[in-house]
Length: 130
Image (tube, rainbow, N blue to C red; front, side, top):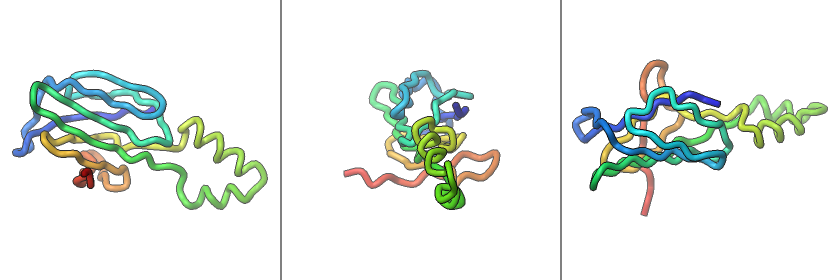
């Protein structure tokens, strides 16, 4: 499990309270009202999809699942290494999401733990959505 925070802001970076949110990955669906603090999500190889709405206001985000680092690929060459990577893949043990996600009303953002500074929300990039 991993704890994450989900926050929704408007175009002026002002918090928007009381938006109904659905957070989901291949392991489970989670529901709550923004801001969602210390939400426990099961780690997974699948991305975390987040959608919050209230009336006509919608905020969407995708938190990219980050798996084992390159050094772990070397371990796969060792006895038992391949089996351990398979267990990690199916259990989600080594996968991680950003721990602070700040959605913005009216856009779909993509978040990556690699673009997160300690104590700050992950940087969201505009998604290429048709």
